[in-house]
Amino acid sequence: MALLQRDWSPDAIQGWLQLPRKNRPDMQLSAEMIYQWVYQDAAAGGRLYCRLHSQHKQRKKQRQGGLKRVLIPNRIGIEQRPESIMLRKRLGHWEGDTVEGAKGTGGVATHVERKSRYLVVYISAPYSPWQRGTNEQTNGLLRRYFPKGCNFRKVSEQHLQQVVTLINQRPRKSLNYRTPEEVFFKAVGGAL
View 1 (tube, one colour):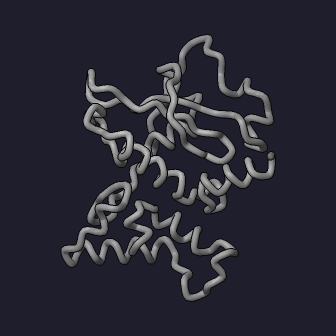
View 2 (view 1 turned 180 degrees about the horizontal axis):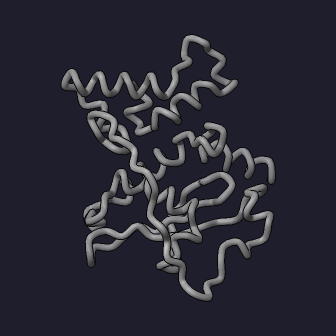
């Protein structure tokens, strides 16, 4: 499936196919159907499962509970941001972070616009991931292409830009299955 080859999740594929602009009942698939198809392919020796985020040949059992975070004492919390920023009502509020390679090999600085989730590159203050949830999610997408320990000295600017383009053209559930590129440029175009 071409959309899996573009590293879209089954959920993103389902949501994108259901957008009104598609308007093709023959193209309606559920995420579950896509997962079943991928796992059947894996059982037959196929490699479509490699396009999934988890890259597992079959489903893993879900764990109960989760990790508890230890907060920094006397920290200034993200909840002190203005309400308009928290609601993602307008463009112009950005979060940033870095994705580091192996020690001493450099890294990629990322900047994500909160409303559209549009990704660009930049540098930010370290050690505050809980304040940049949008950016942390986006960095997780980057890590699919550049895993921890990646030597960024061997990554060309062209390859990095190709990955950024793939991420910006990937539908997001949080954007009603529109792409960050669509949301960003529609809003920017309307503002001009």
